[in-house]
Structure formats: structure tokens, C-alpha cells
Length: 494
Ligand SMILES: Cc1cc2nc3c(=O)[nH]c(=O)nc-3n(C[C@H](O)[C@H](O)[C@H](O)COP(=O)(O)OP(=O)(O)OC[C@H]3O[C@@H](n4cnc5c(N)ncnc54)[C@H](O)[C@@H]3O)c2cc1C
Image (cartoon, rainbow, N blue to C red; front, side):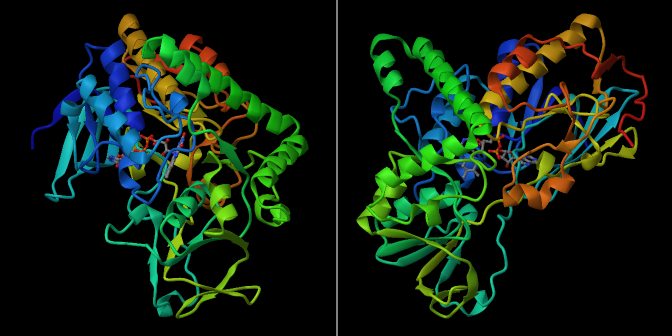
């Protein structure tokens, strides 16, 4: 078996992987690279999810790449438009030809003597295992399992005569026209599905155990529309991007400092879009503070509009059992349904499920600490992309890719080959994702940690990260640069 070698091996051809490859083309054109993608398509999330109405819930001026202006009129965009944008960018930067599809990376082994990773990928189509080596491994594999969404076991589900579907595996043949639909869930997917399905269904009920904050935003950006009339896209784009970054940062900071005020404002805004007397407290007032969990955005208030017309409704209750005809609730009420959509979430997965070994020792991910939110203590020449939870994913993905290019250039300049993050000297460790959402809490024990202070602490703050990652020093006390042949010391804290 021939073993190919590249300077940088990117895992995943979603928004982040394509972005990483474009950054390499721009900033390190002399580096060789390949992208290994488990599926047979570009786009990741935006290719996988095909449920009705699938769209972003952050604006595309910040979910788009810093270097590729978003020119579509819609700021909150449909899944298809995002997928096309990612594919187009890959084509324009000549990345598409570097992607090896149907290569699922299962393991990577670091050898300090040679300063190389040996990467093992499984081909699901031919059942072969392919081996490549690389000097730097860049995991852009997203944050959840692709093969199975989170689907809790509901009592009685086997006797239900209708159809149960999960948004992650939407059946092409499902026609919900004229059907009674129940969507179980209250997150971004549920609030997207409900108004989209209500256009053709007889009725859609959103069945939620507990409410989420829902905020209406315009689907078009007034400033972008105005600027684009006068300026070329390349000039208008960064202005709108920074305007949206600053608004989102201010919104998050205000939520953290004055949660009661933000809660009041959100509920007042919801009330103004719903019929008089609607029980906003029961259905739209969560028990937690804004941004303890991700806030749901609805473009032009489409969810509220569907509730106003009566084509959709919200029920806040829990499933007691499925029956032949629908769902019996803990309150005793029954919802009749032809189709039940379990918008119950994702299963988190770090590094696309690949295992790591450094000089023969297995890496326990939960025992590592994230350095600048993108590298792992004790693991040389590896970066991973985990986007923001309180802002658009790509803002962070862009910074990470830019930082990796800076690191690679620094290594070349100094004649060194290896960069390894060191553990924080002291301070409490906490989960790398500090949301209280169920999908985070279910998996948090398997994920890397973060430290108490920079550079091991994530600030979830883009302007601050721009200073740290685009302009900050590469050589701080949290990282060691070395030559090939330098053995890795034990760097995981006891
Ligand atoms: C329905 C939905 C809506 C979302 N909306 C938003 C939004 O509006 N704003 C926002 O900021 N974020 C949103 N997110 C988060 C979203 O995932 C990110 O915005 C972004 O798409 C992540 O891109 P990515 O490339 O990092 O990961 P992904 O899109 O998950 O792509 C990862 C790629 O890596 C591949 N891969 C994984 N493991 C391996 C492996 N072991 N070997 C080879 N290939 C592998 C996958 O097949 C996939 O193609 C949303 C997520 C979901 C599920």
C-alpha cells in the first residue's frame, strides 16, 4: 500500500474544511494539502440536513467566509444557498480537486522522531483502509455524529401507526401536505420546521418540554441592501460583517450583565407578534437566562406568524406515551398526528470520532485542555475547528485557519517542525462548551476541557479573539516549539 504525504491534512469538507483549505491556498501557497471527507459531497451540515425550510439562524455576513463576500439578498439563508456558496468557494479556490471523498478518518498516530502523523482512513465504498502521512493535522470535522441524531426512546413508539422521522435523516418521499404533524422539540430545528411545514400541513403542533428564547430578525439586512447599491460586494461585505459582529457581541454581553432586562425585552417582542391573550409566559419564557442556551432566531417572525394564523400551535408538556393515533401527554391530553418529527437534537462527537496516539500512547481527549480553543495540550501539530456557540461558527473557523497558517509560517521561518500546547499551570478546568443545553450535557465528559485563563480559556468573543489569534504572539508560555526527534513530554495534568 502506497503512503502519500502532504504538509497539511484537513479532515472534513464542510464550511470549516473548505475555509481551511482556502486559507492555506492564500497564506501558505507552497504547502501541499489534501482534504479527506467521509461523505461523497461538499458542505457538511448544509448538505446533510434536508428538512423543509432548512436555513441558517445566524446572518450570512458572519456565517460566510471573511474572504468570500456573501452576495445573496437573504441575510438568513436557505440550506441550498449555503451549500452552493461553500461549493462555489471550493471551486474558485481550486480546492475541490484536493478532496478525497468517502474517506472517513478513524485514527491518527504521531511519531516525534519523524514529526509526522500517520492517518488511517476507512473507505465505506470499497471497505479499504487508506494510509496517509502529514506534518500537520487539521480536524474540521464539525461537532456531531453524522450517522445518528439524538432520538430518545419514547414509550409506545412501536405501536404508533403514523410515521416518525428525524430531521437529520429526512425521507425524500415524505409528503406532509394536508397531514397533521407534531414536531417534538424547541430548538433551532423545531422553530424552523414548524412554519415551513405549516404552509402545506393540515396543522403543525410544536410539542416542547420547556420553552426556548425565540427572537424575530429581518431576513434581509437593510445596511447590506443599501451599501450594495453603491459599493462593490468586496467593500460592502466587511462593513456589514463588523456591524453584525458588534451587534451580536453587544447582545450577548448585555444578556450576561442584565439577564432580567434582556428576558423582559425578548418576551415583550414575542408578545407583540402573538395574538392578544396568548400565554407567552408558558410557551416562550424559559427557566434559564438568555444565552445560557443558544437563542433561536426566526426570520421575519415566521414562527409567530404561523401561530397567529392558527395553522400551527405550541404545546408545552411532556410525552407520556405514543398511542396508535398520536401522542398522549403527561397532562392527559392527546395529540393526533399522521407524522411525528423528533427534532430532539444531535449527538456531540469530537474530532469526527477519530482516535489519536502520540508516540504510542493513546490520547484521552477528556484529559486534554484546549489551547486557544483550537489545539490540545500534549498533542503536537494538530488543530481543530470548533466555532462559537454565541455567534456564527465561521467567525471562529476563519480565525483558527488563519492562526494555523501563521503557525506553519513560524515553523518554517525558525527551522522547527513541531508545535505542542502545554497544560495550564494552575486553575480550575471547565467544559469546553459552556452551554447548559441537553445535547452538551449528555456528552460533556468525553470532550476536552478549557482552563481558567488565556490562552486556555475560551472567551466566546470575536473582537477579543481577533486580537489574540490574528495579532497576538505565537510564542507564549502555553506552547512549545521544537525540532523533529524531540520526544513529547507528558503534558496532560494529573
Ligand atoms: C441544522 C443546523 C443548523 C445550523 N445553523 C447554524 C447557523 O445558523 N449558524 C451557525 O453559526 N452555526 C450553525 N450550525 C452549526 C454548523 O454545524 C456550523 O455552522 C457549520 O456548518 C459547521 O461546519 P463544519 O465544517 O465545522 O462542520 P460540518 O458542517 O459538520 O462538516 C464536517 C464535515 O466533516 C466530515 N467528517 C466528520 N468526521 C469525519 C471523519 N472522521 N473523517 C472524514 N470526514 C469527516 C463530515 O462528513 C462533514 O462533511 C448549524 C448546525 C445544524 C446541525
